[in-house]
Image (cartoon, rainbow, N blue to C red):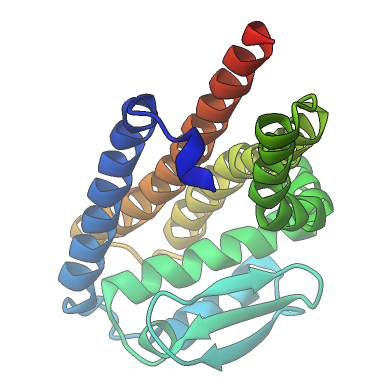
Length: 237
């Protein structure tokens, strides 16, 4: 049924965001590949870097778990657990150093009660529901309006659900930017970065940040498209 409501205007809304997403993915893959092949000067694995930074920053309460894969790293504020991919935990690359410091940036946010992280944690459940059900409810509502001459109330509820995911993506931006800033500061305070390493760390962190910008752009443009479609249908009624 979605094809009944598709129009070329959809491409105008989505293509720029898709191009940005592809560029961001290329940037992060390129930066990770380059700097995962360059060892940091101190030959410290990501796990070693984590232990030093945790001791220096008063984050010894954070647990470390190693999980399979590369770039699967994340911090769990509920369990106070930093999960590091094998590529980050077990190798002494500049990329591993950057990624580990970034995740500890989130741990630092958690410890200090950083408002944006608390907000993101508070709305994650609503955002998940919105992303899973929003499109379904939207098309059900549009089907009711199209086939049974009903109103668009249900469709607008779908858009409202979708907007929760958009809000989540926007809240994520300051959280990720701040975590990267904290990562650089922690590494600098520990004296773990040369000038060359600092450039590599920034390249990895900046590329990763761009993926979040691209994700937010995609969510916003998709939402704007459906708001435009529903507004047009409402005017024709």
